[in-house]
Length: 116
Image (cartoon, rainbow, N blue to C red; front, top):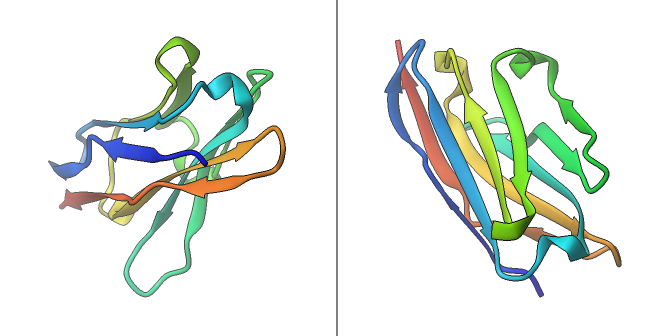
């Protein structure tokens, strides 16, 4: 089992920045992929960014150049740095991990609201 706790969400004006954090309950050396998803009201949950254990990252087209995903193995934490936020980025953001044995875990979500 892996427990994930997100933080860092909030209300920000368009053009502003936020940094989300997700702390895992155990060493992320046992985690293969760490990712951020988001879900806006009435929409399906969508992938925002991923980072694999080998360091490769991947981003949704809508956030490329504005968001950066990173991981700190020593702190068992994955971050999502969000810059130049837009109202359409408003959503609940969820941390997701896939362990090296294939377990899939989700955090409880953190609300991000971008005002115009």
